[in-house]
Length: 138
Image (tube, rainbow, N blue to C red; front, side, top):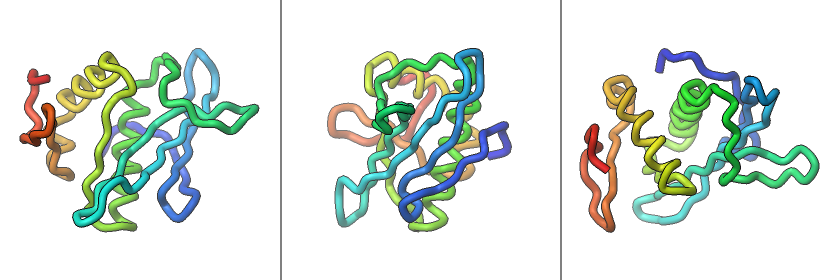
């Protein structure tokens, strides 16, 4: 993707990535992790959260609101690309930790669907059914 994004680095054999969000709330350490949740075919869960500077614990429910949502999501898209460069084209599952966050992800994907679709096959799910991701469909 050719959108502004943060620089990031990998740790733990390209399954965990770190970058820093920059905005009015300061410099916040973000972590993206890929955890295999299913085999044959392989499916990885993508988790995005803020790392607590004191404990090192990653929290995926915190609301950072650092006014850089699009840059953060473009960074995640670049990280997915990097992960797939190392592990091949894998199935990656993600959802928001809340309904509102999931809706936010849907809106962001819809905004960049043409660019994302050029690089990724994107599906939505409803209950247990997968379908091609469509704008304006929950």
